[in-house]
Image (cartoon, rainbow, N blue to C red):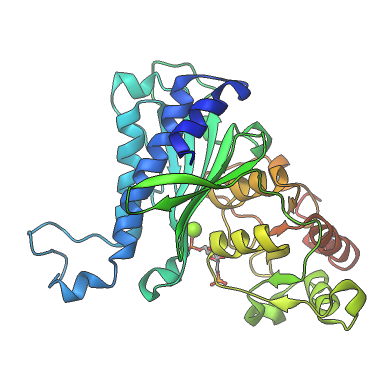
Length: 339
Ligand code: AHM
Ligand code: MG
């Protein structure tokens, strides 16, 4: 049984920026996620235990789970001192720490502390998604926005934690993808899925089809293709959509499939955020042998312009993403935001 800490330390030398600091940063994220796991798992107990209004029985403010998760990750990264700035879905502005150790930190983190907000209260899988870049600005001062506005191709690590039927942490540093399952009885993440590879093809497509009438023609045509009768190529495929990016992607990663959140005429860039939702998932997909794009260009090559920027997203099995791109490029050139 290999623990996350053992694994990260062992792999440290494979990583081009080998440093104990980076290993500590990953471990800090792992620790914070255990606190989030604990709270997520007792979410339904809040009422039974007599929590009232905004205060719990100890008179502490009762925080919504997404705010709680955000606090945990920000605290853990502050404590470690390797991170000089954070972009979080929960904070409009960049989060920096006013202390010398963090100001000397080499890394910046973009994070969605608890993604899948509509599933939080209803006992359905949710997740944390994060990416790590090296800072560009001079150490000694807090990190700045341009440290975060780096392309996905510059990422040094990315990962997600899924709080599902079990809690799992999946991460990559650009040398493949590995998954660790939390054994709650001992509080340790144990290596359970070594060197994950996504099948090149699959038969699952995941999309919020209720938005069908707003979809680009390319997506409509691709959905029609997915629903065609062609047993040789596993079609008609099957639809699976939870509404939690991490959970939908994780299932497709293990089984083979495509997840899509396209742009619409009203929202050309769709819904999902580039820095802390799409980029980390894209890096993991690519490292597992899959693909990620906005329909026209590789997600990881998009130059971010703002912290909370959105992008259309097609991610998963290589052949499936290529097929969706083909339909987008053929039927929906007007959705190409590079033009
Ligand atoms: P959130 O950050 O508010 O949770 O939104 C992101 C989530 C993704 O996890 C999920 O795939 C998508 O939004 C679902 O959106 P929709 O309800 O429009 O299908
Ligand atoms: Mg989110």
